[in-house]
Amino acid sequence: MNKVNITIDGLEVAADAGSTILAAARRVGIKIPTLCFLKDVNDGGNCRICLVEVKNRPHLVASCVTLVEEGMEIITRNQRVREARKTNLELILSTHEQNCLACARNGNCELQTLAKEMRVDELAYEGERFHHPIDRTSSAIIRDPNKCILCRRCIEMCGTIQ
Ligand code: FES
Image 1 (cartoon, protein in one colour):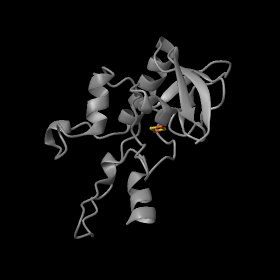
Image 2 (image 1 turned 30 degrees about the vertical axis):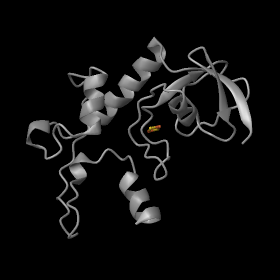
Image 3 (image 1 turned 180 degrees about the vertical axis):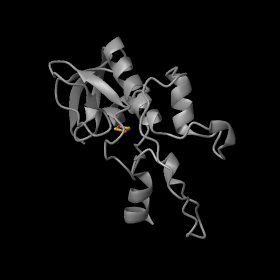
Image 4 (image 1 turned 45 degrees about the vertical axis):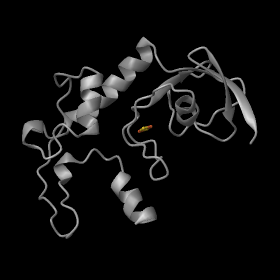
């Protein structure tokens, strides 16, 4: 496989050409937080939690959908990146039902874990709350659209895998 030379947080990496920044970082043990990404299922770049900085690019990029390029200098940890990720998480949470203790996924929830890791304790924004009926039409799953964060994992899973 062809390689491209990049740096991630100052570490020189020979990444597989055609791979994403996220995949290249994971291969060398650098953790970038993700939420909507699900390997081989969903790479829609919907949540923007995996933002990183690329030198000489004006905007932060979603690492799960941005391909590595020769000479890329990537920064996964600085204040700008951390603040942008945290803001995006706060915006996602702003429309999310805030009743974790009564949720079946309490303690086993990626969203909750991320909120803890990013120290999102209080809601910075108050988004619009919806009160949709719970969908119990499937014999296999119960879907509560009030907890949906629009990651699209379920759509991809049903559409391309199932
Ligand atoms: Fe990359 Fe959601 S994990 S945009």
